[in-house]
Length: 295
Image 1 (cartoon, rainbow, N blue to C red):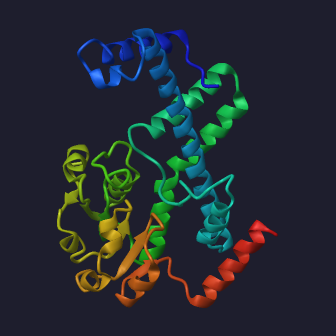
Image 2 (tube, rainbow, N blue to C red; image 1 turned 135 degrees about the vertical axis):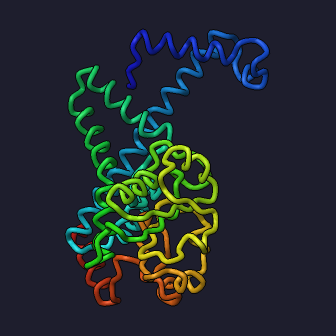
Image 3 (spheres, rainbow, N blue to C red; image 1 turned 180 degrees about the horizontal axis):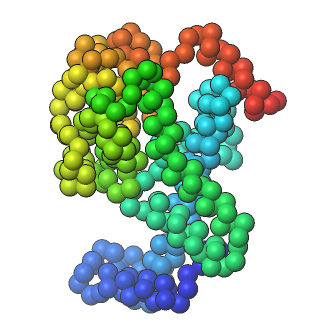
């Protein structure tokens, strides 16, 4: 059970009492019978969100940890995700490996839940939750290793790199604790020249990290790029025509940090989705992944 101390409970009550004050939101007020019930029910809803977000954070970090194991063993994480998703007790929601979770709620809620576990003396729960946080915090370093491997002999320093995505997820302009923007900033801090494109979050990203280059033109964003990094899984990037983009880049390399692009049309469009594998290597990886899972 999520633990809320007396001070936190009083803060919740004050906040929701203000929201439900007469005349502020009659539509919301109609959902509840009286002020005390309204505050109590909204407080319960708020605590439930903590629990749901914390579980989602655990699930995302789990599949990213398994992806790290697959990478070390030469396995294919997509096969494991597919198998796990078939199990109705698990489901495939939130099971896409990538560069981690972000936003204004999920990281904060996981941290709060971890702190509550420690406060209650539930050390095993706190250890589990903190492990999920550490996995999420390591995603930028994992992505940087992918980028270094894709560049090969070329250094990240002085490379011209395009980052597709600034928002923490598609469908929003929110860049709070965005893994995509954190990765773009890390590349820039390493000495790369970084250009960022995002369909909605350009203004908020520029406010947060103004030293990066930004463009609202998707095609122009890859001009002269040594490498393109897909960091937020916007549908615009999935629908982009690789044939139109490959000739504009200095090198046709793309690192898909959200495991969302189909490598087949990229290959036909002469964009090399890293890490590239031959058919034989993929078949061998599938066999190793099956061995990892077992019968």
